[in-house]
Length: 276
Image 1 (cartoon, rainbow, N blue to C red):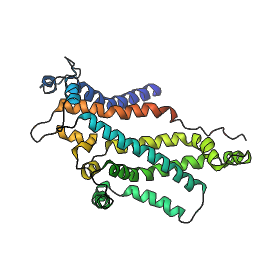
Image 2: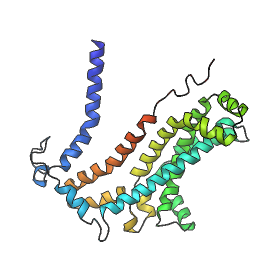
Image 3: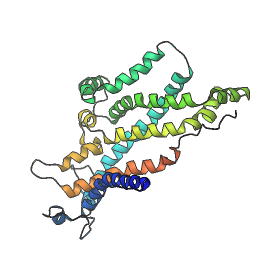
Image 4: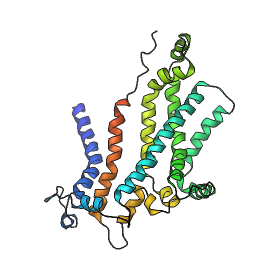
């Protein structure tokens, strides 16, 4: 009976989480007459790809297509994920394996940075980006997203690196492996699940961010998808069919990225690595 109750509760939670996604996809397939009907239908009576065709074929901004916004988001997000993973892994290894002055202060600073509201940093970062000559460029977004994703990534990866037994590295050193070989063949495969988890966080952070993308970019051809989404909302009218179609396409890369890396998100790879 308890198991049945738990299963029912889990099913309700799953339905509650999935229903908004279903409604988004279903609405994107409805013609405008159904979307604005007085009694909305849960299932499209006459499914159509009209909104997707208009979205992909039309120009939200003269001379700029939806594919251009998608490419900008992919470039910014991809660079952020790769750089944050590389820098965070090296920093986490240094923090977990070496003892150096102000090590504890560095770890505390990582937590303090996460407590600062993003809105409070918009103006200081904007002035810094201007002085660096990066205003209205995609690298300005990459550096900003990198700065916000690194503290969490370093702190999380530190635990994965610390969980790897030092005996594995010592055994590799006895066998003649260099530090680089030990890092590549021993440490990296064992911390890969943590690297995947932090990559997902970095991906979602960069993919969904709006405030900095809207502040640091002035050239409309360099807008990312979150900024492009705002063009569907007018003062007097909102193109809900296009909004839902764009939101569906906006969600697909995140889903595909998660499906590609979810196999690596398995805990306990270190268990049993050292024989007692």
